[in-house]
Length: 331
Ligand code: NAP
Image (cartoon, rainbow, N blue to C red; front, side):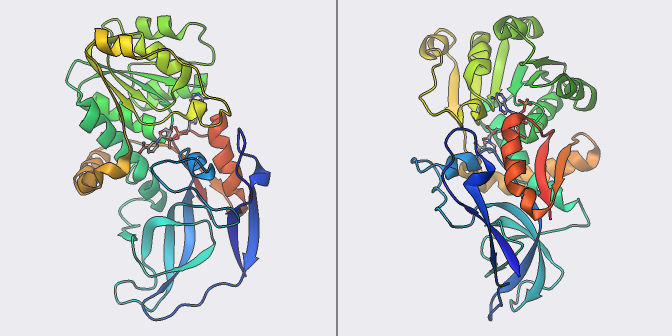
């Protein structure tokens, strides 16, 4: 028998295990032009929270009692398809199922010998591309500039900081525990890092860590941390709005400072970023990330949770900062 995780109800506030159900069904059989996939790694991502609500967004909401989907690595275990063979590994947006069939549409074959499978969900997947393209396309970092990254110890943030270092910038990360802060300077080469949970005045802390002001702010979290970064920006600063995890679970409209005076005074740019808008640049970005990885200029960390039934809990844990680097579930 096969198992599927469906959205049982739309979360109100922080997602709960009861928002999901596990359904048992028959393992599918395949027809001509189809493949049978066995899931090996599942990516859990903060953006999935948005798809669990029914408000208008850049991507359609999940339907109730239907499978949740996310980035998945799977093995082809049966093939009736000319382009896929048994034993191939693929990456794609797939359903939270142990086994599923596919026509192969939208799937990319991965080379599981070149890098661990899970890397194709992180540093060589969506979050690596987000870090590279968000920073390059909107941030345009220049040598000697100061870059502040929030959510710095996570999948996107840890890569943003390293790329900014490769580009010759001073890099300051913001994260939620002392252990993460230490990891940022020790393992990822950040110049400084701030624990937002133990810092009373974030505006002052960022000012102290950035004596020359902030030229680029890569925003993964929104809320108070981002307000504090905004109060420290320089003339012609670039602010990349990649995510706002601190407000994803809010049930009322969040209050923040009025950004306009800061943007006007500093002739600054603030721009929302969605990685899928840059699909044409994925091959070049992927090539660069793979090269830096092979050269040892980039490194990555993962939090690997084991077991299909643990997928919802791993997703929920993102909101408690339980991950370091990319959170993946190994099936
Ligand atoms: P992640 O950073 O690996 O995981 C989420 C992290 O957010 C947690 O580890 C936690 O770290 C932090 N966090 C949770 N609640 C927080 C709060 N209230 N305030 C501050 N930090 C909080 O996740 P990711 O996949 O790399 O995604 C990072 C952000 O980028 C998310 O906002 C996501 O939606 C966004 N994103 C956007 C795109 C795009 O195309 N726009 C693509 C990918 C991701 P701490 O322990 O440090 O709190």
